[in-house]
Image (cartoon, rainbow, N blue to C red):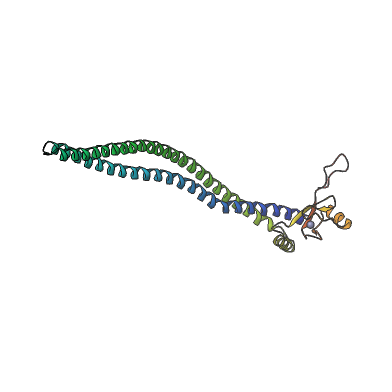
Amino acid sequence: MHPDLEHLIQLQGLDLAIDRARRRIAELPAAQQALEARLAERVGSVAGVKERIGTGQAARRDVEKELAAVQGRLSKYKGQLMELKTNKEYQAMQKEMAVAEHDVRAHEDKLLEHMEHAETFAAELKAAEAALKTEQADVSKAQRALDAERAELERELERVTTARGALIAQVPREALMLFERVAHGRKGIAVAEARDGLCTLCHVRLRPQKFNEVRRNDGLHQCDSCTRILYFVPPPSTGGAARPS
Ligand SMILES: [Zn+2]
């Protein structure tokens, strides 16, 4: 194979590797953000439950205060009961006491409800905190994996960039310019295999004369359709002539 053609095929491989590494590196910040969002969601759940607990406790304290007031009223009535002079006053007071007793029971029921809610909230908090702890472990593991991946990609990028520099030093300027021009117009892919008389990237049939030239791999031949630089991979030798090197 012509050395320029061989070098351009290698160059294509390196450019694709550089492109892959750069794309993946560009994806990493979003992946990190997604992890942080996962964690923030769990932190938000815990805060939400704590807020409900706080609201519940404040409401419970209000009920306790009201209950104490009603109980105070009731015992005051009981104290006054003996001092009443008339039957009418006595009946009126009993009515007041019945209302107050009803009030006490209603407040006691409310308190019970609050205590039940508090138990549910406590269980929810425990579950939310356990979920947060698990998520924290998962997220920091995933973050370490992403950090390691980034370091590996950066090493790979440096390695491939160095190899590219060494490679292009061996390629004549015109060949390199042709490669860059075609790559620029063809989404970074400047070389294509020709197989069965076709360009395998644009799938256009080559003129027989062109395909015969390409099969020799003896220079830089471009696809008439997509302008990519064509190369030919000889079929594996099946006992015939030895494959030319
Ligand atoms: Zn083509």
